[in-house]
Amino acid sequence: MEWRRSRILSVRRDHHPHRERFEQLKVDRGSPQQRGLQFERLIQDLFRQAHYRVERGAGAARPRQTDVLATSPGHDTLLIECKWRKQLAGSDDVDSLRSRLNRIPGAVTGVLISVSGFTAAAIKEVEGRREQPILLVGAEELDEVTDTWGDLRQMLSIKAEMLLIQGRVHLLANASTPPPAPRHPVGPPTLGDEVFVDNTGRVPWIAAPGGFGQFTFTREIHSEWFASDPGVVLDIPLASLRHQDDLVWALCEFASLGWTTGGGHWSLHQQETNWHGIGAASLSVALEQRMDRYEGAGRIHRTEELTYYDRCDGGFYTLTAELDSRAGEVSYAALSMQMAGVPFDQHPLEELCRTFGVFAPLFYRPRVNETSQDGASMLRDGSPLTPVALILHEDPDDSHDPHWVCGIVAVNPLFRAGIESDDAGQLPWALRESQLIVCDVPDWHPVGERHTYRLQRCRWTETSDALIVRAVANWPSSEISGLRDGATD
Image 1 (cartoon, rainbow, N blue to C red):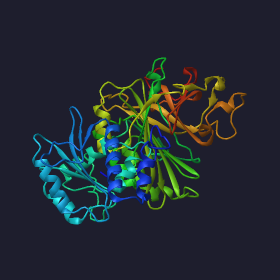
Image 2: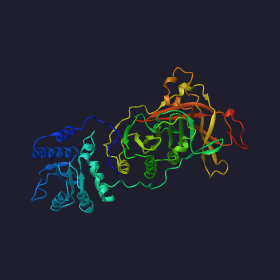
Image 3: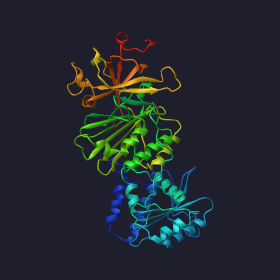
């Protein structure tokens, strides 16, 4: 896991309170001794802001004093040494800090901060003595920590984890730092609960003319679980996902952490074509078969957009991303979670952040959007639908009717021309830019029955980055035709 700058933060401020101090020290032409003292004070204030109790010039490592001792009740005790000089910090500096650690009782972690960087020998020394951990922090890490309220505590936690588990020092700018270890999924992504069937048989997804837009269809909007309180929002940047293979890995990790269900829906958007599917497993295949999907898809823009929607404990979330169509590189990825309230147990979120190397501070904020909006009043007459595919729920234990129609994919009557209503402009623009519409059918029926469907209503909700649409189609019992023998309404 790498600690890298996040493209977004859930709450973003323009300046870290100590950013200007650090930048000023970089151009300070005063005496090195004076700059060193100011640097130590800056480090002291950074750790205090991270809620450590800090003492400068503490005597914990007598007979020699250390620069900074930082303690956190119930967490870490850190012995910190600061270096601002022209030469790189070397193995002698590591040995000096280690000798101080040996004179302190209890479990204490060393932190060596060097603005000029570290020699390869210093890194090798730290990696070879993990029983007495020392964390190395360079200027690039300080840039990150003082950028838009970066999280020092999380950075140090990840550095310690990488040293303990992977046996390597992590530095952003040191050429001696080994490349990150390859990611291996711990298990397969989650299969969808339903399948698409068109006139050719089963298909893994549905392709349709359409343009860009971070939206997807779903058969259920989980915001309807919420009470009158619209809940809270938590946005989590996923800057460590840098390639489509990372997205596939992420979907597998979501599954292992219990963050995907068989009811997850997704859409991929290109300049002239959209692809819609169910389940993280089919999305993984669609990402891996990107070039195959592009055959016959019209003009291909250099960017492809992804929206994945699923439920989580207490609400729902979207995973959104932008990918390079040629190389598969990810320029942006983020989770936006919409929950009924702040969860009492934070451990699942903490594990999620550890898994994905999330180091930006996370903030819950009130959900200001309406929980869901309804376009039923615009569809009073029930627009007739022309199905192009069925969504089937399979029940192998039902010997009489193992396949049930639970949804349809139909020509979108709202496509571009809109509908005859003064309120048509209130419909989400994305809903009017997709030539096909994926609909839930609340009254399931066996696949052998034939019905005439009408679009009864559209509901939609939003996350920070995406639109989620639930279209509902149904059939009047008086229009049933082609029933199999023995079938009833």
